[in-house]
Structures are given as structure tokens and as C-alpha cells.
Length: 299
Image (tube, rainbow, N blue to C red; front, side):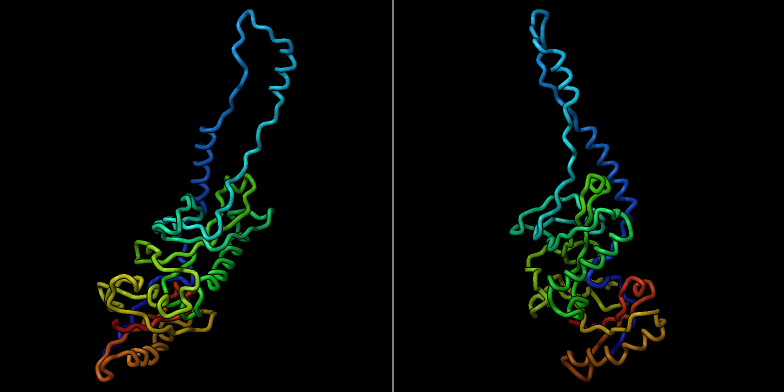
């Protein structure tokens, strides 16, 4: 019988932790804006009139041509709901999306499950929009993926959100999209071969998208990964703490010892000889919203 107590890896709660700064999106948006400007232009339908050509109303034609209004640029439309995408891990961390939808019947790693809007007086890269989407998308994801809070914490289904580029927002775009995906491991997303909508409402979905690992937590070969991929350890339950200030390492470490030992005993084939492990949240993870530890056992 053994217990291990490693620090908890970054998981986030119902969301994939976003690391890309908005400043990077601004730079990308500006670069795209310059590229678009270089590709745009206008054409003229005036024929080449030779010396003998007759233009009965040349002055009026010239004035009409010069005063004709140019088409008003329009932002790209918002992504359709239930659209699927073939995103990579880095794509999921970006604040904007450039990938085009792909058929949901084919290979894909993400599904857009909600599209909302924000007020015209809000800046796309401002705090108010960030608060809106970072609140609404996890809330709507909970309904979309199903299950309890515990089920979602013990799965690698996550939500990310995308907003227009700064250039698109300047043209009037006011949408945001909530996208569901599954983390395969620390470097890649999982191909969504099983349904995502309501997946955590039943045992099969929870088993498929569950949080597992390649080795005992705290060991050199430990890596969190989706349970549908090869693994040797699986998560059992969480050890929740009340929100507020971080209780300190000593408290969060001691809180899960008995709970995780009992959880390991409950799933052991031999109640007299079994292994279990407990991961408690670090201060950084606590500040990121992860106010719980995790119990593990060999699978």
C-alpha cells in the first residue's frame, strides 16, 4: 500500500488555460490587415477611346465615376454554431480563430457549441469582453458537455473561446464563440471520435474523456492524458476546498490523505495491498481557479 503526494499539473476548471497574450493577436491582426490591404483594389470599366472616339457626355461621366461611393468593408461573419474544426494545441490557445470549419463527419478536434454577442461600446481586447466570454463559455459548456462539476473536473473535455481580430472588431464584428475540445496529452488535442454534447451524462462518455495518466503521479514518466489513450493510472475523485485565499501547502496536502487512501481502497482488487496517490493544488493553480486536489489509483 503506497501513497504519493505530487503537486497538481495545470488542468484549469472546465476550460483550457489560455496563455497567448492579446498583444500577439493585435500584431497578427495588424499583419493580416496590411496583407488584406495589399490584396484589395478597384477596377475601371472605361474603354480606351482612340482619337476618333466620341464621348457625348465625357464631363458628366468623369464626375459620376469619381463620386461613386466605394463599398463599405464588412467584417467576416461569426462562425456558425455546431461548426467543427481541425485545431492544433497552439490554435486552441490563441484568442482568435483563423481555421475554416470542416465537416463534423470527418476528422476534427473541436466543435463550436455557442455563438454570442457583446455590446458595441466594448473593446474586443478589453477587460469587460474578457469577463463576459470567460464567464459565459464555461457556464454554457457545463450544459453542453453535461455531467456534474465533479464529472467535468475529472475529464479532459475543455472549452476555449474566440473573439474577432482587432481589425474585424474595427469593422463592426461583435461576436464571440465557445468551442469544446478534448486534451489528449500535454502537447496535443484529441480527435473527437465520440460525441461531445452530453458526453459526461453517461458512464461511457466519462470513461472516454476521463482524466488518466501514463504513470504514477509524481514519477518521472507521469503525464496526464485522456483515458481513451493508453494509460496506467486514472483519477478517482476530487478533494474540493472552499474558494477564497490559498490555504497553504500544509493544509491542502493533509486534506486529501485519508480521502484518497479510502478511494484507492474502494477500487482495489486486493484490499490488503493497494496503491493510491494524491495531488494537491499549487498556489499558481489555485489563482487560476483550480481549488481542488485529485485522487488517483492504478487503472
